[in-house]
Image 1: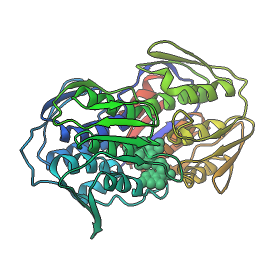
Image 2 (image 1 turned 90 degrees about the vertical axis):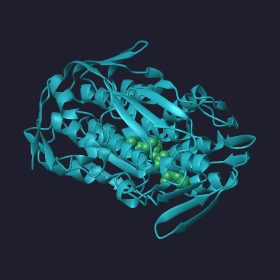
Image 3 (image 1 turned 60 degrees about the horizontal axis):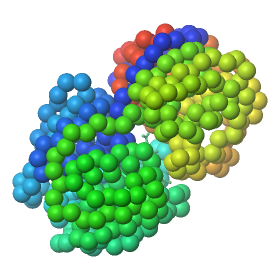
Image 4 (image 1 turned 90 degrees about the horizontal axis):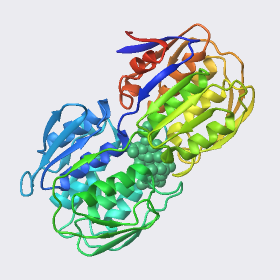
Length: 424
Ligand code: EPU
């Protein structure tokens, strides 16, 4: 196992290219199960979660060719592997997002047996809305011995609401939309998630022959078609990776240029950074982050898109820990997603968690120590804090980071951070 070791205090300067979005790539790769013939998908990041899903797809009979420069060819053909419909525990347990094969498998192979993904450290991760949506399309679903067993002779279009206690569901919308594209008749998904990653899946499916309208809105209308064909497609840039590098620039009071960014996907993040006092200039596909020493504390509430993403909460917490004054973060998507607060406290941060709120009293200096990563974004927050802490920070359990950030430490190092990966 590796750790990341950081000497704090370097100001980041230079430019960095943002990769394709993990959370768009995963459901799009799973949707290849629905297609007849090869698809070439560009901009796939080389990270552990992608490799896990590829293993699942290969296990389901898909052929995968890794081409140059982050392009994958994924081939499924109609009529092949029809009796192969299981995503086993050994693979699903590595990544909760494996649930995104449920909708495509059920639609294409009429049966799906997917290991129940369970909870995780960011809190309870129910899938009741996925199941509700697929049942509404006509599936029979039961859970047995840790597996979701779904079957349907014929999926039929209907009207479905995916509204849950904390808003819609991203992967639930992906699953129901993927199942509905080949269903008989018209499906209307009310309260659909509007995240750019859901839009990217809809655009991919439409390019493959699906008829989805209302893309990016909370009502999706899907007219079922008989067949989908392979396509060439490029994944959108990862807005969370971009936001993470923006905060790397801001926290080190640096000056960095991000390439391959869709600023529109980051409106809430950019607005909040500007409120803090960070200077950000954007154009059609870049964003420049500049130093401004007069930072202000702010209040942040995570919300579904276009609100502040929960996946940026830990990184903002890191930044707010360095800004004098009181900031409050309210988590409205995953109410328990504050495990990183305890690790930040070990670095000298003053954070009180009360229910779904974290109250941060920024300190002018934090100190390096040993910290433990609990999940992907928490890990990003801890590395960002290490960039400005006095002395040396050792970030342990970085396998969580490797799930979602490609060569994170190498790219930070190329911007001037003193950071390296070492064996434990
Ligand atoms: N929820 C339900 N019932 C469901 C599904 C979700 O109540 O059936 C609740 C959840 O408990 C949560 C809220 O709805 O309170 C939103 O969860 P959602 O289903 O949208 O999350 P997800 O689809 O499982 C994706 C991302 C997460 C990201 C969330 C929220 C992927 C692979 N994962 O998860 O990304 O935090 O949306 O935006 O797309 C990450 O990349 O680090 C990550 C955790």
